[in-house]
Image 1 (cartoon, one colour):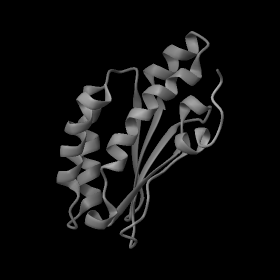
Image 2: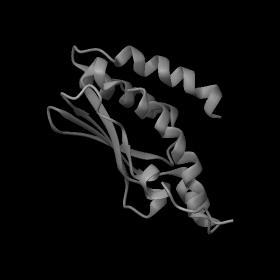
Image 3: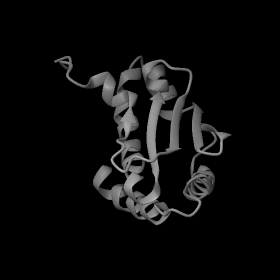
Image 4: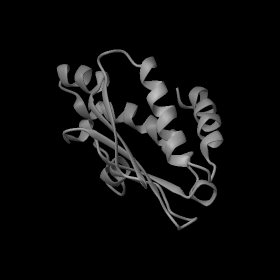
Amino acid sequence: MGPVLRRPDELMFSALNERKDPLDKIEKACRKEVGIYPAYFEFDFQRPDPGLFEMNIRRCFFRDFFDRHDARLVTTVMCAWDVNFMRAIDPSVSGLRAERTSLLSLGDGQCRFAVLETDDPLAGYTDKLGERFAGKQQPG
């Protein structure tokens, strides 16, 4: 799935990597994409301050499906896809950085994606999913 869909995400978000109103453009693009998701996903968007855009997912088909099969952690395979669009936000071009601080698949109450203004052109993407599995032995 990744190689097929990665390029469209990169193209969409590379077009948003501009200095003029980048958070507004990202918010507009995210709001438009909601329509492609079925009703068993629930989103909300927030702008707690002018330099921050949050997308929160309160219900996720994949998490619900794998929960019903007692395999919630398998949901993280689907969660890993989101890294593609979050990494496409380039702080050296747009002055923005991305982070994911919570995930339903890891037991949090929502998935929280945030895009924040930054003055650091080398600001890295941070991700709770990556932190959860970094340096740990996988069950085998």
